[in-house]
Image (cartoon, rainbow, N blue to C red):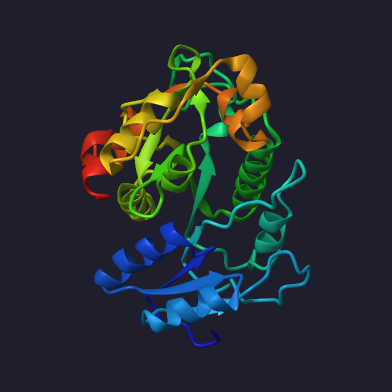
Length: 293
C-alpha cells in the first residue's frame, strides 16, 4: 500500500456494501483499496481482483500512514458491539495525516441517532436523541469525524441509513424458524434502502458538489416492521410469522429485535433525491424484493 495510484480510493470496512461500492468504482476506472479485519474477507476480495489488506482497528496502534495519501475515503466500519463510544473511529482518524487530509470522507451512520420519533415524518433537521447504545455509538462516531474534519479542512458527508435489504440480506432464516413478530397494530414504522441503491448513493455522495452535510437514506416508502416480514415471507413463498402482543414480545423476542421495536420514525428522503440527483433503482419494497428472487 506504499505506492498508491493517483486514482486510488480507500474503503475502510469493506463488507457487502463496500464490495458493491468497490465494483462501481472499478467500473468507473478507479482503483478501490479495501480494508477488512479478517484474512478470509481479504482473500475473497483479492480473488475478486480488488486490492485488499487487513487492518484491525481494535488493535490499538494500527501503524502510521496506512490510511494517508488518499483523496477520497469511504468509512463503513461499524462501531464495536458494546459501549457508548466508537474507539474504531478514533483509531482510524489517528492514522490520518492532519497536514495532508483527504478531500472528503463519506461515512455510513444509522438512523438510530434520531431515537424514537413516535412515527412522525422527519428530515435531517430532526433533533438527535438516540435511545439505544447502538445509536449513541454511531452519534459519537459522527461527532468525532465532524470535529476532525473541522480541524483539518477535510470535507465530510454523513449517510444516516435505516434497514438495508437485498439479495443475501433478508430475514429468511428467521422466517424459516417460525419466530414470531409483534402484532401489526403495535408495530413501529421502519425505513429501508436496497443495498444496490445504497452503494450508488455512497458513490454519488463522494462526487457531489454538496458536502459537510447529512442525508436521510431511504426509499421514501416506510411501512411497519411486521408488514416487512409478511411481504418478505410472501415473496419467498414462506409462511407468514405468528403475531404476538407487545407483552408477549417482551418474553419471546430477542433483545436485539426488541431494541428496534422502541424506535418509530418515517424518514423524508427529499434532500437525498434532490441534492445527489439519485434515481433509485428500487424505489419501493415490491420492486426491491422482486430483485431478490
